[in-house]
Length: 118
Image 1 (spheres, one colour):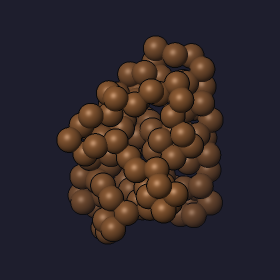
Image 2 (cartoon, rainbow, N blue to C red):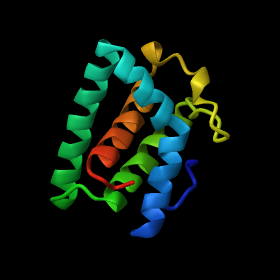
Image 3 (cartoon, rainbow, N blue to C red):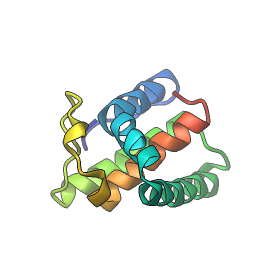
Image 4 (cartoon, rainbow, N blue to C red):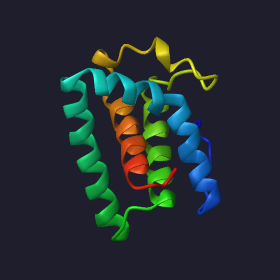
């Protein structure tokens, strides 16, 4: 996923979320399950993501989450904070020092997983 990626609705949104899960979600969620502090931070970010979705669309769905992730990704790129390598090397991330954008994207993955949207 990069900042120029257009997020359509439906199946394509689920594909975008699946790609995000592969890029940051899997390794990040494993790290969160091993670290109570990181898990608490992800939980707080997840609450903010859910609230943003409810305010924006009245519900949490794949298209909304994918669009939200696109916005966070674009902002991260503008600030010079790219995401981990799309080849799946997020294992190189020190999740105990993850920046706001990675925590927020990890929270998007968490919300998508808990909502059965992947």
